Length: 617
Picture 1 (cartoon, rainbow, N blue to C red):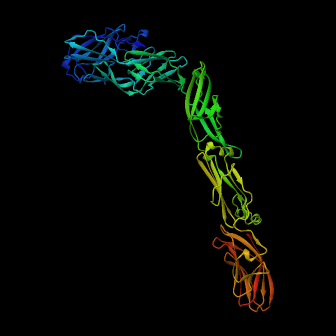
Picture 2 (picture 1 turned 120 degrees about the horizontal axis):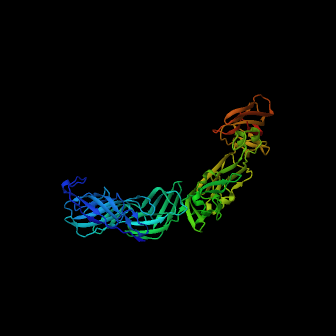
Picture 3 (picture 1 turned 90 degrees about the horizontal axis):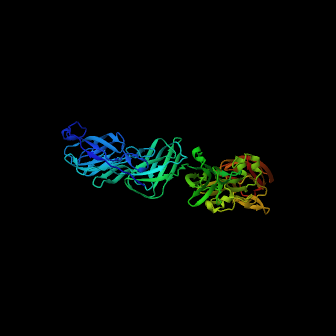
């Protein structure tokens, strides 16, 4: 730490009335000269001595005893070896107290004994010094007539100075942003208490930008800041002409006092690289989600820095959990702690690199793992005869194949979740998966699929099989409906138990379906399930036994429409056999086939149903 030395003397010259730019009447202004006896608060440092030197052309603001006085501009006309300076300007003829601020600021003002001016937030980088006009200083004196009663007037520094050296490997730097780590303002609008001779408040920016065409490597630079206690020190961000950024930070609290220089040494600048990781979810050859790939990208290091780095180590983290690791500058990151799949959400990238001197530096980035929704799916397999009739559920339309299948069987039903079984069973990923039949109780299964085998004996109705899965917050489901229509239907030995009977019906020969044989009419109905209009072909064999002289007949209906009629109207008696075929359509309103047997008079006539088949058409 070095003490900056500031001193000047005020000496009055001859009085004259000249035109002025200020608000006081011209006849109240007098010319006077400020001569320096010692270096004033200038922006040039005299090497290791810490002395502050004047430069020709320097200007100051002078306030006289009028509280509303705008600062009078005083300009330097000569310097004596930069240690002495002479300023000329005007003050009010009745002035008895003078306040002087360096540098001149047309916007500076005074209220009572409080002066307001500006500490620049942008300063020009100058090798071995701080920027011209950056360092503020203040002086005051009282006048008796045209004499300064206190003798020499000393300009006291108002600002502190921090100094740093650019490292040798940073070449072509164009700007340095200096920031207070505690967020305190270090430049901007400052208020100076004239009685205390110090800055009492500062508002504005917590950073100062030091810039020039090129900042030289291994050179020292100075920054004028507001005095104060800066807990945690300062951060530095250096930007080069090639667009690269480097950062450094101090951690030690700095109690910066006015007039002091604080050398911070050579900045340990590190490259501000932002590593990125691209995360994609992967699938195996069967299309099952089986994990995630994390590919690291670290921008190419500039030549000025690459030679200093000996190696990288990178971790992909969420909180304290490490999901991926890599010890190279690029490539796919390896699995850590068994996390084959990366759950969706935000991750932190912590990259560390080692310099040739053994120093380990860290940089951070972020990555996002997407939702697995686009990579997971569920499926249901299986078919029945109806699927071949209409060409559904993956079956090609083929009536012959449909008629060759059992009418109450669901063939090869199965469920599958397209997530690798090891991921589903891993509790880290929060998976839930199950199947259900016809909207019933959900059944959890092991692995990622279930095959049920052929399921016979199904009721003639619509049956559904559904699979549901939730994995890492993404939900999928699949469902398949199996239409068990009752087709193809073949009954070669119809019995009363096979059909719905009404009217006068009985069992003939102990097992055959018999309609009639007594007073009234007889009906036998067989109902089917019909999801849509189904074209059918019917084939039947029956006999009619005639014992009386009056006619009888047997009619066959498909979904309420008569398609077959056989009757006997002559006087002969006996048993008459018939084999008939027809076609029709089962409809959703009345999906059934029906035999109706009737006769015109009481008697023992009856019909015996020997066979009935109903197939897809």
